[in-house]
Length: 380
Image (cartoon, rainbow, N blue to C red; front, side):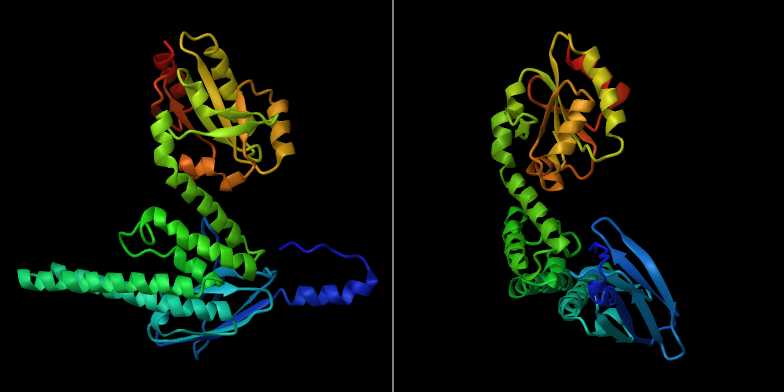
């Protein structure tokens, strides 16, 4: 969280106090392993990055000091002996994490209520997953009988559903905690969804509504709201495809006029997702403008329906006008939380989809000469 520098003498002491409380201390003992080094990882939606390491003393002791921690808890991992211990860390925390023998099964946490709650979920979930692995490994035994195989299937199925029930119970009982957010995203081997695909949105929405009261400033709340928007969009995907032959969109242009993608049926259309905030938008749009010019008089009309994944209307409008973009430029100004990105399952920008005159998506992420060659074929 950014802190403004205040140049007023009367508040200098208070500011100093605020800076001190942004520090975090994480310490403890790891006993029963030959590993000598422990690592601290910072976890973001896209990566796990080692930010510090410590060599254990002869008694297994270690200590980390983290500066500039956010007021709202953020996710970190202690990584030791090949295993990770997840922690939610907030400014001012003094956290003690000890472990004897098996790290994940036996660690304890003091000094952070969210991290202790996370431990309760995480240890049970990992232990259950390890049980499933052990049962699955028995299928490979030589000479296993059909009766034994059926017994193992029954045992595996019972354990699998027990873990799932406990996971959902934890999420509902602790919905106002960040530990529930962590639990939402944990999957057993082979699982794509938490519960039943589209039904998952119920649990995401339950946690998001509770977090709006307990952690209204948490970035995890915004991530949940974005995920909910994408889930809602996917739920409507089937009906929208049946109407248009592809996921339909209706977004406003820079003048506030709503333009429906399906209104372009009969033309070859490139649905292009971009952001004015990206540093490469000028170069990409310049290349696309040249392609757009080349096919401006093609026998079958070619159009670009460009969707901006921005949140700043002035920035978006300025980019459209300064770059003199000649095609349809639209946005709902919801950034990465836009349902439009969910409908097309856009995970990163830029991205595009080429739709032929019959309304069929015929290519994805196609640029430059490849795009021109495909347009030659489609616009004849």
